[in-house]
Image (cartoon, rainbow over all chains, first blue to last red; front, top):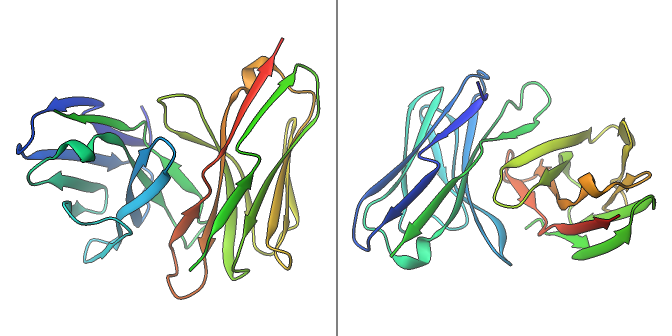
Length: 113
Length: 114
């Protein structure tokens, strides 16, 4: 099993729908991140969390919200999806108290029609 | 704000060549630098992690160096193979005002042809 698991892996939805992307990790890391990747724009940080009670906005948080339900779970929500949120979304984890190495999930491809 | 630049954006070489991919960053206050590989439509796989106190790391045919004072890292790939074809990204973990923030370059798209 993967250390960082994202669900769903692929999702097609319509404008205005609420979408939740989920991430769970078995690495015991305190830090979790949500990124989106668009062709030509690279990876951009949406939200990050240093522990269950510490959640921070990244570069492009507008239109997104997150929930850190437990140390191992970090969910990303799109309350009302729009077409320009079509992208590949990645969850990542790290543990700064050790090496700070970043580990990624396999990604969730979201298409908003 | 930390900015990370990767040059070249794309590289196409014949099999067997030794390659150098470049990564530069604007703020030397980093915790570490990490190189990743990404295959099309897939997640990022960590290749090498260099802590700020280290100068280089090696894994098989890969060697990454770090020069914090000049804000540069290079990824050296020896004896390239078609299976090395992928996008390579570098990321720095910022030690500055936003401790724990990672900043990514846009990647170098590598094609190794037989």
